[in-house]
Length: 305
Image 1 (cartoon, rainbow, N blue to C red):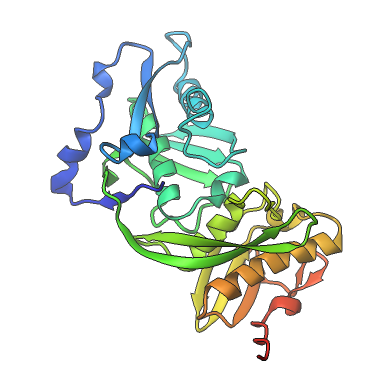
Image 2: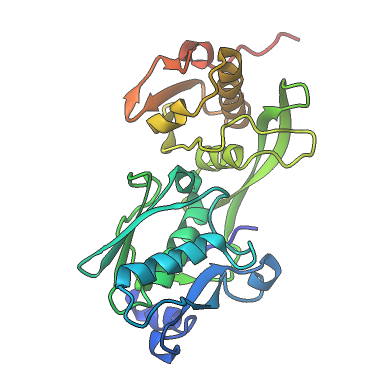
């Protein structure tokens, strides 16, 4: 179950500080890794939980080595549980310049949107800003900034984690995955929208996460990500990084099923969309791999009854 992040005024920052242990209270060489709380626990407490971590590094270990160890543990979770990242997320690089840590994950991190992105960002930020050498964090995916994020420089005092379930709307949706024979098959869902979420963002996020029904199978490659999606004047603009197109299967028929999965999910779930345009690395394209975008560019005509 999703949790919420609520922006607060500076006067409320002391409330946020009360949620976390101070670094000076930790034994030398020990830190807290901030992971997602269990859903049942979060309903009556914090959205994140701090887990003690002994870095098992020499006392004179460099700050970048300590920071790397913290983030690697954050990716792994505890016993494989609690990590806020999509499966397959990996740390690609970490550097410290001034008092800012620059953390770059692989493209899987860019699959996060809305509240899931906020929670992941702050698991990283809160875990790293315990260190005296780090006061701010910038997080990228595959070397690129994440378009869904409003601020690219993250600091501990920016948010107050709340246990409130601030769902502002629930929207029915139809997602298309593959059935056992590889054909497109519909799966009905209810998308929960939080403050700042859009239907299009949550729809693509759900497609990236994959099916929930047992007899449905994902069509999007594991490394497929979305840079941004927006709806304007009844047109849906889907922006993809080039690496997502590169990750498509070679077979044109499989590419077409991927494209149809995206397009039919959008048209059947968002009634205000009549046209779909696809951009790759910021430029509009006419082909999705080997498949013409024109094949899904407009909402299909409703069948006559």
